[in-house]
Image 1 (cartoon, rainbow over the protein chains, first blue to last red):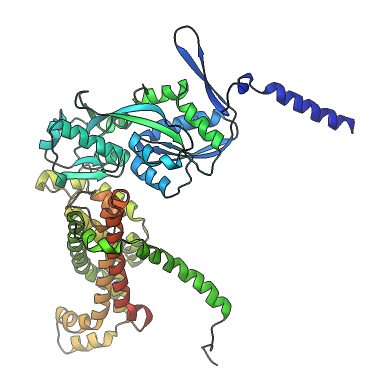
Image 2 (cartoon, one colour):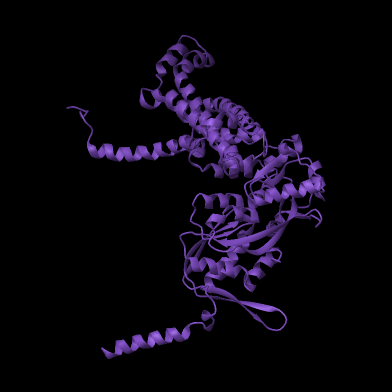
Length: 274
Length: 263
């Protein structure tokens, strides 16, 4: 009778000793604490949340978020993250239709604003991106600029107009005074589909994000778009009122700003948030 | 022994009603979601007219192709002792079972410019099937042909061969026998098969978008237009969906005797 009681008391005491001292300072169950060590600040991520969340992320985040998701689930005990990758336009429409999403990571701020009423937190910009032209390996058509896309003979792949990469591509082309004939444009429903039209299909060129081009490796050749003609895409992430664990969702958004996540994003070719 | 009950058992009615609700509710939902006041405008916008025109031309072309290619195949399967007939039939019916997008990937592997055949077609003749209207017709024929073959083959099997034997015995050449005796006999099945193939071709999405891409006026058929307009122009998407719904309904009503009556 005494032994079980003593064991129980000991377990409670040990659990109390194991809790992080920084808990008192942070109201979030997962937190990225900044400790200034003189020059640069290091962001260490601690996770006390658990449960399940669903994250809707822009298609261009597919590879990076899969890696980040694995690391996040390792850092947070008993957690499970399910990802949906598609164009931010489709994802925001799904959220507005009531999709049970807990975190929304968009490729532009416009789509995050569309779901303003569903947000349960403040949007945090965690990365930025730029556009690039992708061509067949070897660049047989000799495309060197946006203007060349308007003159080339063949099918050009662009994102659909409701996807951020589509609106940005239109912006970039307009800025460069290049008009690609719509009858030779195949519209991909998201950045990955657009890339696939060039890497797997017969489209001779396309406009996707720098990160998509980098991720495709040898399947495509990349033609850089000069900064003056390029567009900066800002990627915010925000928590949404879904059916998953709210603390874990907030922790995920925090994690995106941590060193580890930022390193993964930088490696994929994303620009830092600021 | 009576085969009919005066009143069907309550349990059967209850469960059947649940099943019917599964069919009826989505359709009712679509009807009530539609913007009826602006329907005419939505359907006559340039994008909608383009998609409608393209869908009509490609599906009709695919039906003609299915007819031309399907009749000989149905004949071979029904009337000859072709070695490996079971394998040939399985091959012809494969697109019916294959997920359409997988069909699209298969077509891509065979006909894209990276493939041996597609590469040769482009280098020798400048023909590129991907991202072209011809590619749409190819994809639609691929999925619609099995429907035609299966319908006509069944009719050929059921047709009484004695009429053809008599005609041949009276001195008619095989071609004449086919034209004057066989075809008229299976004409209803050919018509039904053609209508079925047409409906399938009209609704084709996965293979089309994968193989032929999504190009306005060139490959953006009705289903692709609906998909693209879903978020930005939901009214048009729903209006176009109603068109497809209406067509499907008309097809089913037209074929009611085949499904519910004698073949």
